[in-house]
Picture: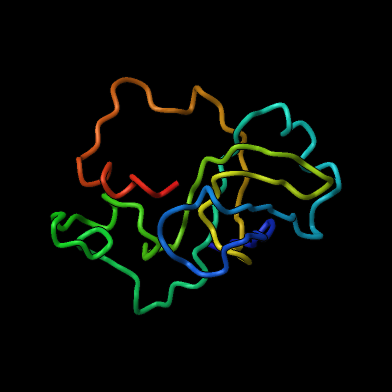
Length: 150
């Protein structure tokens, strides 16, 4: 499998750290491979889903089993696939972001938890029909972890 970035993030946050992501501004500039009309029509949606690559996670930090989320031993250890940490086997991140504006091949968004220069692998319009169906449940530790995330 070979993936190539479709664009790169420009963000006011240059270092990976948790919490307060809503205080950052971010945009995605498409690469030269894309025509100037690649984002046309995306502005008719309120939100977009961004798939990106955690490019600064070194191989030795990749998790393959369980760990305490954020290293907090007050929370029970859970498998890497039961959390959204950046040290994932394929280093993929996904965020649903509010569209702020589009200028040519630049997409400006709120709520992107990716640092400056992050490679973007895909952009998809968020459609309500792709959201969860039925009751959503999650453990208390995840609600506590996310308290100051945005």
